[in-house]
Length: 102
Image 1 (tube, rainbow, N blue to C red):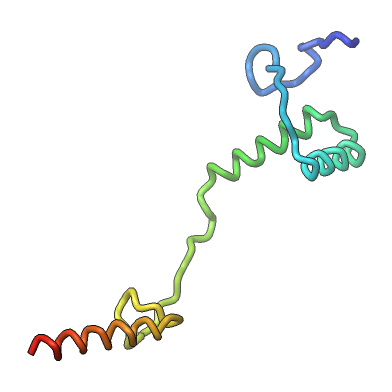
Image 2 (image 1 turned 180 degrees about the vertical axis):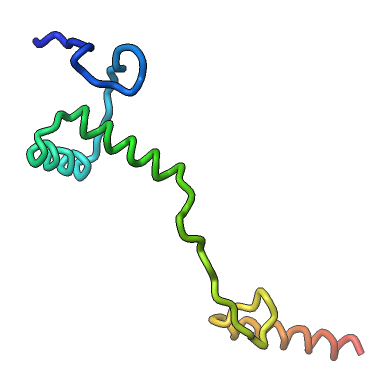
């Protein structure tokens, strides 16, 4: 078994690196192994790089704001134009109620 020398292992944190166990899904493990072979990096380097990228993306605001194009419609807000049968049923019930109250 090989002894680790913490001085040779670069880290962005102070002190020795933390040893932990991670259960990886098969697809993730395959991608890591592909990178290991292609780039000649260690498992630690690949996982740390991937996690740092994920955390930096997560904390960055979107560079382009999401924009919704508006349009004029004769329907009131909240009316689902894909479910107009329900609207017709609701109007029929309201009409029936108003006629029966007279």
